[in-house]
Amino acid sequence: MVRCYCAGLCSVVEVMAVPGTGGPPGHGGIGGLGGSGLAGDGRLLVSELRHHNFDAIRFASYRTAAKLRFVQKKTNMHRVDIWNIIEAFRENGLNTLEPQTEVKVSRLETLISTLYHSLNKRLPVGQHVVIESSTSILLNWLLSAYDKLRDDEGKLRVFSVKVALATLCSSKPLDKLRYVFSQISDGNGHLSMVRFSEYLKEVLALPAAVFESPSFSYSENLSTHIFDGVKQINVNDFLEVVLEDPGPECLAWLPLLHRLAASETVVHQTMCDGCRREDFTGLRYKCEKCHNYSMCQECFWLGRFSPPHSIDHQVKEYTSFTPTRHSFRRSLRCVPDRASLDRPRFPEHPEKTLNLSHIVPPSPLPSHNGFEGGPAPPQSTSLDSRSSSRR
Image (cartoon, rainbow, N blue to C red; front, side, top):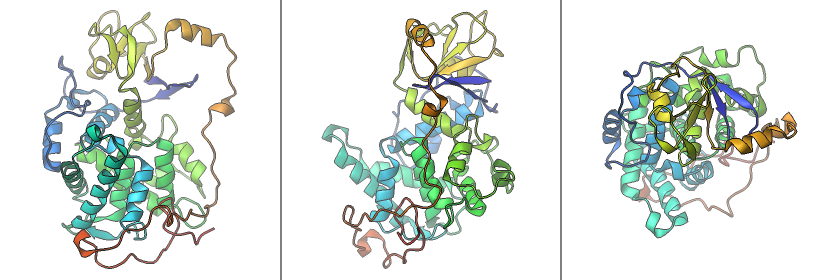
């Protein structure tokens, strides 16, 4: 059992780490989270994953999150947020298509390159991404990830792309999942179990793409198991269940992906008692049994420790560093109302979608962009501005 101290919160959240089938703990470090490495297409990215030491991580949820963080940084998706993705879909006329519509690879390539072109406009010149290589890496990795779910070798479903990009982008989990809910809810603002099942199938293709399908695989009854017996699930119900800690076991890697990103540059001004390294970065783990015993994320993940600590001791996970004197001072203060720590609540019924036509004009549909005719008429409402017809 791992307990997590989230930055800015006074409460402790317990997280059950899913044991995995990784290789035996070793003394080598875990590479790849810095985002360096050779550029190439999706196949090279998959090959590069195998050359890092991710499979030595003892827990499947952490192992999966570390691998997907590597993919996220290699494709520069850690610089793109959910609003950029929504804008790119609309700009390329894909927001009006039904989720199961299959589009050609050339059209997806245009969509992805639009993301990176927009990204470069927001970045200083010295930080620009190489659009061609980033587009090639991401596109080929998506094609590889959804190879078993697509009917046509030269096409990909719109819903697959939306789920993958929304998962890999850099936004807060709350914003990502609100967007996801807009894609899988009905006209009354309630979760469609059929669409939720499709979402689980699509999102679990991502762990499978990094060789973690034995730990996080899809099954037909998975959606009903998560919302067992619950009727008329609105956006707040959905967020409460999926963002709960611990949440659904099949999605245990999802919050970890965000915690890895949040703690990546955090410096813990203490020494790791496993490897004796000082001022380490990333997640920190503190034993609840051994006095003042801390470990860096590598030592915890690999099972590397020193006496008197034992591998079966319960630990707390920290995503930020707070000096002991500050923690003691804060412990003397009044405990804030739990309500102030709760996530915001959203309207239970669909809201009128904003008309963004005067902000982001839809792109023309020239043949050189791979389009074949104009977009289909609006059918429903979601955060990607498909229509404003629903109330």
